[in-house]
Amino acid sequence: MNSSVKKTIPELMGRKGSTQPGTPKKISMVTAYDYPTALLADQAGMDLLLVGDSLAMVVMGYDSTVSVTMEEMLHHAKAVRRGAKNAVLVGDMPFGSFQTGPDEAIRNAVRYLKEAGMDAVKLEGGQHQAHIAQALVRAGIPVMGHIGLLPQLVSQMGGFKVQGRDAAGAQKLLDDARALEEAGCFAIVLEAIPDRLAGLITRSLRIPTIGIGAGVECDGQVLVFHDLVGLYDRFTPRFVRKYAQAASVMSQALIDYKNEVEAGQFPGPEHSFTIKDDVLETLYGEK
Ligand code: KIV
Image (cartoon, rainbow, N blue to C red):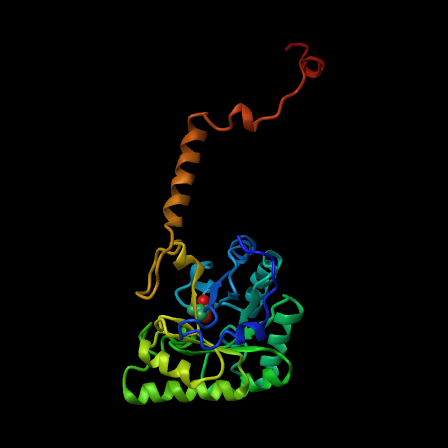
């Protein structure tokens, strides 16, 4: 468990350059979607909690992140806020909440800050979305960028594929990253890109990079909570390390409970409440 120190965006930005030995420690980020996951991640000392639109898949059971709405994201973000005390909280802008233009993007991002208590928002997209990121930053909303594999555009990208493997693709990602830095983003997520390209992008920026499937040279790392603890069974990307097998622990608990209920072994006396004999006698006239 970690001591209670509220983290800040400037403090995290100061961790830039953690790729060199002897420099500040790297930035840790994980997704959270509800009160208990936020509480656990915050108590573990996580720097950033992302209310990711991945909740469409890992919590709501959709096949992609496209379906989740702003209202649904806010509902989860509020629960995360109640569980987290110290981490910087980032609300993911769902598909359709920012693409129509800066006005709607600001309106939705403001809701994250005012209604759900988020500290910042994240949006997917590089050069094409830099003007939206800039408008949000100018409106006083801290923005985290997200480039590389963009799950909201997964059908356009031909599936969950590594990005930036050829020269043109790699150059585009470098240009995307620079455009987002120029727009005022305080950090950028790099998803599913080759490790040395992520290293090059990281070194070419003044703001931190947070990698997911982007190798160890980023300034920080992010994973989806359900992947990390082993709670999502449909698909595990190669870049995930499962730190636990939560699904099998939970599944065994449910089987044990069901069996004990059926066998009359639960509840035991220790889970039951007593009543005095004389009180019962007044009801039934017997002990
Ligand atoms: O929604 C999400 O979980 C994300 C992470 C993959 C960065 O955007």
